[in-house]
Length: 522
Image (cartoon, rainbow, N blue to C red; front, side, top):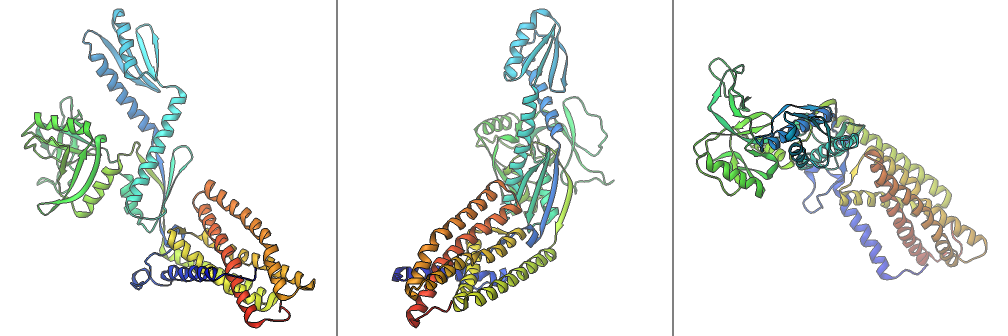
C-alpha cells in the first residue's frame, strides 16, 4: 500500500486539477466568468435562487362533466345515423348518459348503436330507457388520468421555459404543486393557467358584432375577439358569430413554432395526417369564406380562406408581439390542459431570502470545516493537516460534480454538504487509528502505514456503501428537498472516498518517502 504507481499519481492529480477547473466558475458571477473557464455553474433551487411557488386545484369534476357532454353528443350522432330511431330525453346523469326510445321495435338497434359508442361502459336497460354509464372504478381511473395528464402538460410547458429542476407533483386528490426557481410567478401563471384548447370553426355569414347581448340562432355562439384593440367608437369589444361545430380539432396539431411573415410575428402550425386531411377538406369547400381560430373561447384570428390548404401546414396571424407568438406556440406544442386550474396558493421567494440562505449555508459550512480541521490537527498532528487539505479538496470536487451534472443545490443540499464535511474525515480517522495501533504493536512506519490502509479499507467501504444505499433510497422515494439532500450526500460520499483513499494516501506516502521517519508523529 505504500507503493503507488506513476499512472495512479497522474490520475489523482488529473482528477484534482479537473475538479478545481470545473468548480472555479462558481467563484464568479454568472455574467463575469472568464471565457477560458467552463461556463457551467451549480444550479440553485427555489429556496436559494428565489422563484415561484404555486399550488393549483384541478377542476376534475368539470372535466368529467365535459367528457359526459361529449359522450352525449356521440350518442346523438350514433342514433341519428338511423333516422327511423325515435328517441327522447337524451341527457347526462352523474356517471353517464341516458336516453329513452319511443318505439319498442327500435330497442335492439339502439342497443347495438350505443355499444358502438363505447363498448367499455356499462349499458343498462329499463323498459325503453337506456343508460350508458361508467363504473365507480372507471370514474376513479378517469380522475387519476386527467390529473396525471395535466401534470405532464404542465411539466412540458415549464420545461419549455428553459428552467432547471422544476418541482411538479401531485398533492392529494386534485391538487398540483409547482415550484420553479428563477421565474416570475405572473409569467409562470400565464403559461400554466391557459387551457390552450384551440379549434378551427367556420364563421356565420354576418361574422362580427359589437353587441355582446345579441341573440344568436341555434348552432352559433358569440365569442369575443382576443385582440383588445378591436373596439368600436363606443368602446365595445368585437364579438364573432362562430358556428358551434368544430371543423378541425386542435388535438390534431403536432407542432407549432413562432416565425415572421412580412415582418410581423406569426405562429406556424402543422397537423397530423388526420388533421391535415380534415383541414384540406374544410378549406377546399369554403374558399372565400371566413375561418376562425378559437383559443380558450376567444377568437385569436379570423382570416378569409383564399385557397385550399392541402399540406397540413398553416399560419396563425394576428396582432402578435414576439413574446406573445412564442407563448402561443409553446402552449400549442404542449397540448391542451384536460382540466381547468385554479390558483389557490401563490408565493414568491425573493432573491434576498435566497441569498440569506446561501450566506447561512456558507457560514455553517465554514464553521463545520474549521471545527473538523481543529479536531484533526489536534488529534493527529501533521497527518490531520493532510486530511484537512483533502477535505478542502473534497468540497471543491463536490462543487465540480454539481456543476458538471447540473444538479440543483437546495438548502437541504447544503445540509448534506455540511454532513459530508463531518463524514469526509471518517475514513481518515479509521486509517489513522489503525496506523496508531500497528505502530504501538511495534511495526515500522512503512509497515504501520501499509497495514493501516489495507486493513481499514474493508471497513471504510462498508460504512460508505451503507450510507450510499440510504442516500439512493432517499432519492428514489423522496421528493423535492429530500432529493436535494440525497444528491449532495451521495456525491459527497463518492468524493470523500476518493479524497481519503487516494489524495490523503498520496500525501502520506510522499511525506514518508521524503522524511523517512523512525517513528510516525501520530
